[in-house]
Image 1 (cartoon, helix red, strand yellow):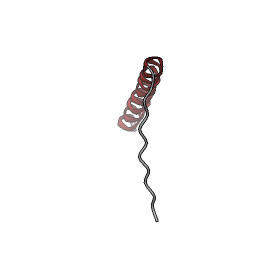
Image 2 (spheres, rainbow, N blue to C red):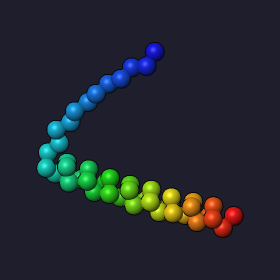
Image 3 (spheres, helix red, strand yellow):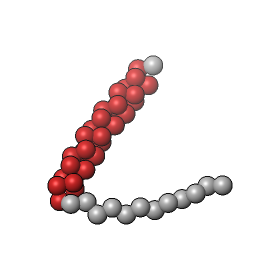
Image 4 (cartoon, one colour):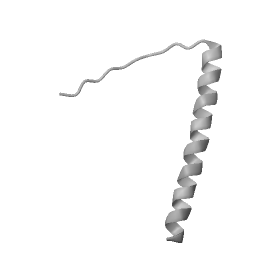
Length: 44
């Protein structure tokens, strides 16, 4: 049995800023690691 839950958050402006900053950093790390893996794959 799979259970699903939906949550809705209402962050304050300060929390919105921190969340945006966090996800921007996560995106940069993800893109860098993806580029590294693709380059490694291409080189064999």
